[in-house]
Image (cartoon, rainbow, N blue to C red; front, top):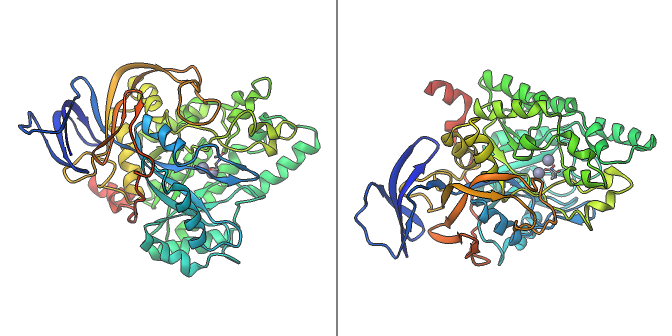
Amino acid sequence: MSVLIKGGRVITAADDYVADIYIEGEHISLIGQSLDVQADKTIDASGKYVLPGAVDPHTHLEMPWRGETTIDDFESGHAAAAFGGTTTHVDFCIQGKGQTFGEALEIWHGKREGKALIDNGFHIAVTDLKEGGTLEELASLPEQGVTSYKLFMAYKDSLMVDDETLFKTMQVAAETGALVMVHAENGDAIEVLMGEAIAAGNTSPIYHALTRPPETEGEATNRAIQLARVAGATLYVVHVSCKESVEPIAIAREKGWDIYGETCTQYFFIDQSFLEKPNFEGAKYVYTPPPRDKSNQDILWNAVRTNVLQAISTDHCAYLFKGQKDVGKDDFRQIPNGGPGLENRLQLIHHFGVREGRISLNRMVELLCTNPAKLFGLYPRKGTLAVGSDADVIVFDPEKKATISAATHHSRSDYNLYEGTDVVGSPEVVLLRGNVIVEGDKLLAKPGSGQFIKRARPNEELKPQALARAV
Ligand code: URP
Ligand code: ZN
Ligand code: ZN
């Protein structure tokens, strides 16, 4: 099967030019002007952007946690992703207490098999080095294409690890070249603050934010950076939400340390006041770290523009408002933490980032496609448009108007974080390895066609020292 994408504006992290793209089988085989080739299918992309398929490095599909399981599985979550132009994601395989990493990975592979519509990989979330997984087993995972270790510094009731586990994992990563990812919040302090709030009768969703002050994120971010430095590991801080964690990352990077970070779409648009919505609606915005004071939004835009942060993910962790979030009606601590977002990242960052002049088109591609691919060992197979790369392509109509709504989204969640938001610009056609998986409002991908990708180690060229040399 061959496909010719004709006359579009080809945008990568580095380039912006009008060209044709010729795809043979699963790969891009030619890029050039007015290509003289015959193809089985021709897509007219004139007036459109042609972008690399987006890569989401942070999702939680079919994740059981605290008695609830996230509502999107590897089929519905992938449908949402595909409509949003995301063709590859890396999900968190969470080690259950007492489980080996191999056992956890087997369970997570079972979730994707026969369902996956887009390409996928796993980070391993280390929760237990005492009874389940061993350091030796952890060291063997990069050979299986699992090249990132995730640790939660919060959620004392479930996923949190102590500093010993964090540090030993960092030491293994320093040996194996895997990337260490941290959820950076001080879980002990938060546990005390939550207990005090409940004892004082403060049970509503706003207390989710008030018991997780930004300083608890800043402290844990700084601790993780310093420990990574001692261990000699490369660190990636997930879902950075506020000035208190942006600052230590900026300082570390100025020193040339191997520290990276992402923020997520929701932190640009949703602030702490959303948690005070009446009729328990605030529970829709209970995710962690919590929505912050609005002043942080400009700080985050500035951080992604200036490369203090290298990626924007979704942290898609979808629940139902009715039937799941409401288990926390009388106690904010019981509200399942997380929100949907896989489908709308590109639309929102394009509209409010690019159209409104906060970041360039090239930088948008870098943040949503190229850098996640480089950091998570998928580049140059994914994350760019180049001869030999997988033909993961978005034909994006920059003028198409859309209103974001749960009524039309493809997640199984019964609400959308951005309900009613008008955007200009949406994916029109999406290809995964040369196959059209979305065309207009039609989903053409077949369950089971998304592949597990064995990932390489992070790409050296992103390191602060290498960037400094390049300037
Ligand atoms: O609230 C969130 N973010 N839920 C998913 C788990 C995590 O901390 O990423
Ligand atoms: Zn987290
Ligand atoms: Zn997450």
